[in-house]
Image (cartoon, rainbow, N blue to C red):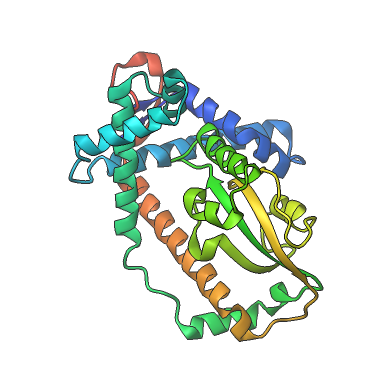
Length: 297
């Protein structure tokens, strides 16, 4: 079955492609589910991912003004400069030629502008909200061992695919091996550059399990190899290891504020997507029974 999302046709093959992208992590998380039920749920979630992605792309196309052609030409030249094979570049962006590649880049830029506007007026959490979170969640800060860790991260998401993210983190890793400092590469490569991507002191369980499995086995001062989590590719550095009990409020208030603020941003995006879905015209239909515009690049 194909999907029509505001008149835009989405092939069943795209939903199944998304399912295959999600499958490794999905099977790991739901390994004890009945296989038939698990497969049905995976396809449902994949369909929802595709719908949300298309709705966001449709909304982003309304962002004005269009990116100046000279800017797109510069970006295209830089992409080709950093890619040995133009056909591989086209494959990474799922396009066929330079014109479609520039359209894809323009859409990414417009999407970024859309989210910037959506999130620009979100207030920082109040001191009262930060204190309340601390009092209710002290146990999550209670650990016999903490490490101070920073990371270079390339996210894998609807904007950046697996190949593109890996190529970027691989380049950072190569520069590390050739003598560049971890700290210098944070600003150059990481998708998270606040405070040099310093995550502060963390305890087991605060981060993704696959992140903990790597960083808690590093020595102080040691830098990891490239590793994958559900969020993307990472290179981590441990700056110190500590034996602690429950830290005081002043020690963790900045981290709590960032956590609350990030959740507010996530909630705003989810609410925005829900609004798009509520006003959208979405239906399933046999793909060979009509001829409508297919999903745009």
